[in-house]
Image (cartoon, rainbow, N blue to C red; front, side):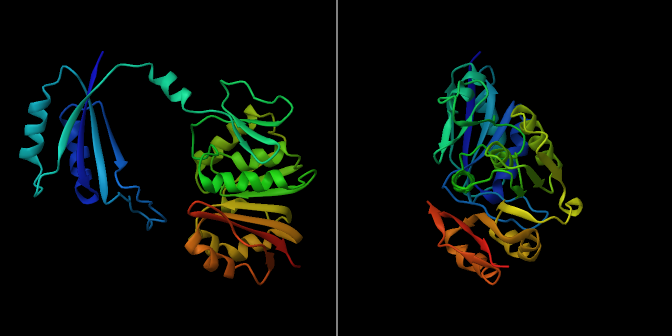
Length: 293
């Protein structure tokens, strides 16, 4: 079977109208994509942020009269000027295979590899983490995750207690466990993230080391290492809590921080930690250091 894509170049305010209407007009799927590489950071609670320049893509069977669909859009959506619309034929493919082919093993530091489960590990004697894209976020491809993985690879985690605060898929927690940590406490306010962490821990045979908690149920422990890949705002708000969870001379690594936010985030921790200069990867930075007392 062949397919047709209907692509609408619009703005964030109008995207939702086209999204809903395309479904009503028979689209099998609708995708909203950033059309101008505009990042979205820390939306207010209860809001659904949309890019200012958005592509709305409706997927139809090629038997659909696409001219009638376009006419219906133009008569139903009051937008002036009406956005540019184009159509593209889309050949049928093995989409699962296409998706799988986009993921390759990735190396972080000297020892640590993230390997999709359907591929052979490039180095059998390395620290190989099996992790597939799926529940929650975090496969190591984003700079914030990569910065944390490379930092963990540099540490001596043997028999250490580690906290992964904002664990997502559990990638950092599982990396810590595979790198020798004795216990890893994983914290996230999203139940789906905690589920993903548990599933990925099972896949990597580290369930005996991984312990998951929502923030309100996290025990008051003292960890040797704490890593938090969240966002600048929450990292600043959580500074007293995160500081309280780290033992004297314990290690801290913070990520999810834009370079322009680094000084503000560091100011919330510098009284309790000896911080190293921020490590940058494109627009993102990692802040790490050692607790003074």
